[in-house]
Length: 526
Image (cartoon, rainbow, N blue to C red; front, side, top):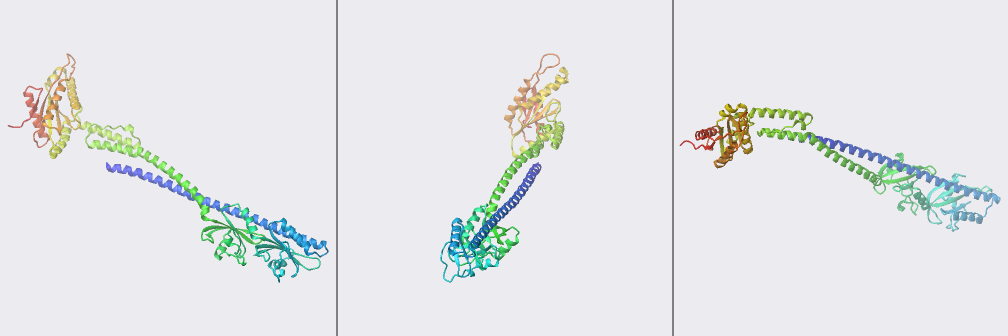
């Protein structure tokens, strides 16, 4: 039966593990799906923020280019108004007013020929300064009438790093000059920083050669010596070829997402950099919450499933195992209630009940309810053999209802049956659960008393005799009547229980010859 119990436990454990594994896989799958969807959503959101920032910056550059073009038209208008001649003071006054009106301008100036340079801030240029050799002048001359954006450089007058928006101006005398508007990179960087809607990302503007034009980290901005920080070629190629976003190591050696959007006004790119940790930490928190929730759900389901399986499988099997153990142990009163069970277990219970009933019928006397002679000898012999091995004391009783034939002749067999039932009831009531009693035949009864010495057996025998004598029986006619019993006791050394009962039977005959209604002890042969 231990094997059956082990099987039931294995069944319950297997089902619980299968359920736990299934829900664990579901929870992990859900967590992975949520992680991927959240990551995709975050990248999409970052890309949208980058595109919005690029559009904003494009607009800013277009407005700056429009301001430059408008200023150039104002200067051209001055030339037209004065018949092709505009004094230095007039132009300086215009440039000074425009610089004062627009705080983002570092300087506004122009140059018409190598000898004439006019600045709105009024600073003196270094000796030998030739504006026609400056990049802003040369680039504007290449595209007359169009606003040109010049890459960052160090302004020779102010010493600050700036960008120049330049456009040609045309006096009527046929000469041509260039007007420039300088804006510091710090101004542009601050504007982009305010326009950036994603606090996690760090923006940078990179030109078409991979040089960093602007960056939140001052160490990566263009330097005073005119040099630039250039992105590593492999990183720049990754950004160009990514089509929008790529996961690589940033300039600080941290895994980061690079999300780029083109700046069509200049042919550059605005690159937003977001470290991987900043993207996935909120996602991991959500995933951890999901996993924890699933863990709680799984635990509850496992507990409920185990409880339910214990009710449906383990408990019925354990109950049936106890029934089988009781049957194996020789219990005469095994209670089997099939209605307590369900499905297949009810069939097992029905079979056990039938087996118990058959076993009880085969081993018990149908009238008295005591063990029949064969069952008594089988049970008593096992116990007697154990007693002999252990050296424990034990006694056998043989008892007979006195003048039982007279009871049958006087009152009938049905009343005689009641007398037998009454004597059997006394035995059941007075004997211990370890004592073994049976109907030997007719009106004779036999009892085996394990772990009982002669003195204890004599006391019990006298109690039985008095208890039977106190019984009252009613015949079909006449007053109530009583019966007595004679008892023979034996505790001598015997080969087996049958021999010991023979000794007790001899003591019983001695009690009958001595007048009945008494207890005699077998003393052996003299």
